[in-house]
Length: 89
Image (cartoon, rainbow, N blue to C red; front, side, top):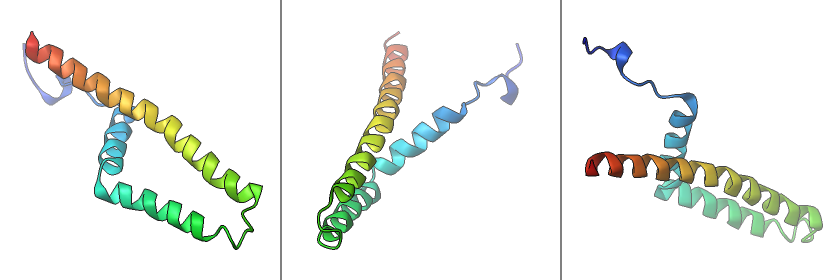
């Protein structure tokens, strides 16, 4: 059996995006960005008179990010679990 690059498993698009998202969100830069967004949102409260639309903006944003991160975290956990099982075998 010949071993070449074409026989190696290819990473799919989701795998690539999930890995990049995990690296970005798990970094200090990711935390700093999230903190900056929240501080900017809080600072604009008086400008928008703490309106329902102002509150809806952060609620919608955090819901979308949380929804997407659940899948990204689960994907990372699945890869880690597979790696552990392979090492134990």
